[in-house]
Image (cartoon, rainbow, N blue to C red; front, side, top):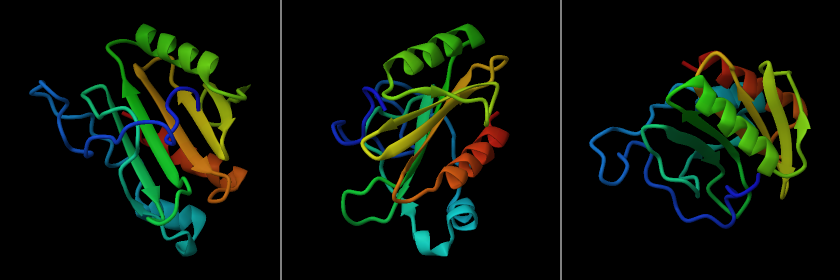
Length: 162
């Protein structure tokens, strides 16, 4: 996943915390993926719960959801969303991510613009709508999601982007 690997990043701020020095709240991503979605797609045995995602701090233009089993070092499922000022900034963000993530393969199975990346046992699907200033990344450990489950989770997130 390029420079934003959970293994090496500092702890993220809590989900609802505003960024330092800003009166603006963090980007609201609460409806993009739920524990119920995870249970429907992965099954109740997945037993994933909300947790902190290590990495970039939440801000008015970025936020995340992260779910894991709460024990061990295994990565679970994450959703990261970036909202830029305009579609051109999102296109630049998407291109930069595509050029810096590991083992990239293009895909249009979730949106017109997308790619899959694999790093450290985690698959990430990054996608963007070229008409909107948003980029999203759904990541899942290969121990947690099959390829079809990963695709279904990503499609759920894509349908909810606003």
